[in-house]
Image 1 (spheres, one colour):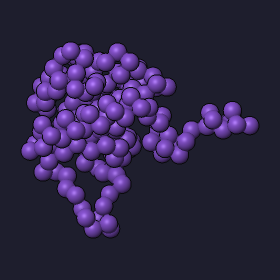
Image 2 (tube, rainbow, N blue to C red):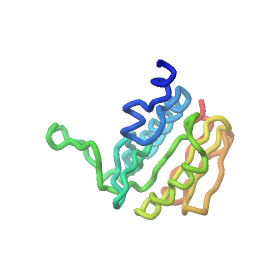
Image 3 (cartoon, helix red, strand yellow):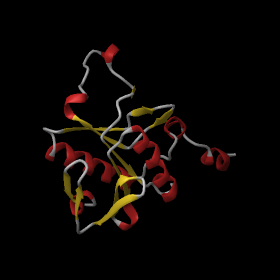
Image 4 (cartoon, rainbow, N blue to C red):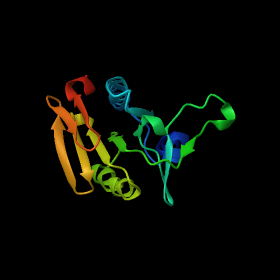
Length: 163
């Protein structure tokens, strides 16, 4: 009976439509948020795990990048949000062990159709990031590179992301 329960999706997985993040995933996600948040604090607000409504579709990007002036903290609990209709400028997805690479590449199409300018796909096992500027246009950066996102004007040393 336990084997069947172990294969059932958790509440997290059911609500977000993706697997539970791993240790590596969590570290890399935190590193990206800290780096973009500190290097580009005057320009962007970086938000993790916020449900984003794209047309008829709901997505929960691991990391979403918004223009700083478009997203504000609401300290009144009644005005806080668990989802947004605001389309992010950039989306960053991190491949988790049970996920399918092609599935995440396909996912970029709905983000671009909604107005996202940049979509990153981080692949931890090979310390690589694919930066898409359109569904079929991308550059590949590895651990020793400086990632350069021309759409958002972001540059990150990937050695710091994968450390």
